[in-house]
Image 1 (tube, one colour):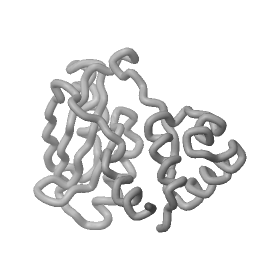
Image 2 (cartoon, rainbow, N blue to C red):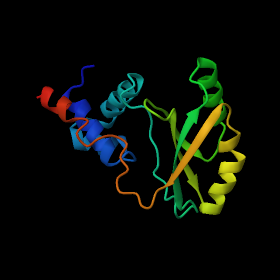
Image 3 (tube, rainbow, N blue to C red):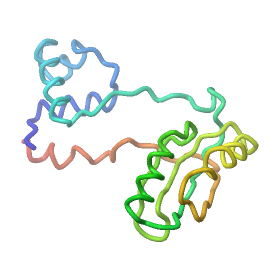
Length: 162
């Protein structure tokens, strides 16, 4: 995928402030707001930009407990994986689910208000998931880094666009 220096500059500007207007972005990269909007639309259509989001203050919203849950299924058959994935997608407390290699089949990130809330989530959501043979939970003590992309993600592209 070919990105020129203006595309890369736009992506860097958006990574710093996704709420910047087309006028502000255009000023930062040397484009009119119309040209900036057109470039962004193209980046979205090509899948380079897959969405925009607001980072919420989870503690302020009452979610002070992050739990990392490792799940092992009783079988790794296509049917078991599909049944699990369909069911876990309906669990409102699960904010991320990754299919894993290695000893565990899935790694989940669960948000809870506190340990008692997680107990209810464990009983009412996680332990009811199909084909689960083992659930192992670890409580995060503190968030150290939370990035959506590595800071070096655009470095290679920036060097090649020069």
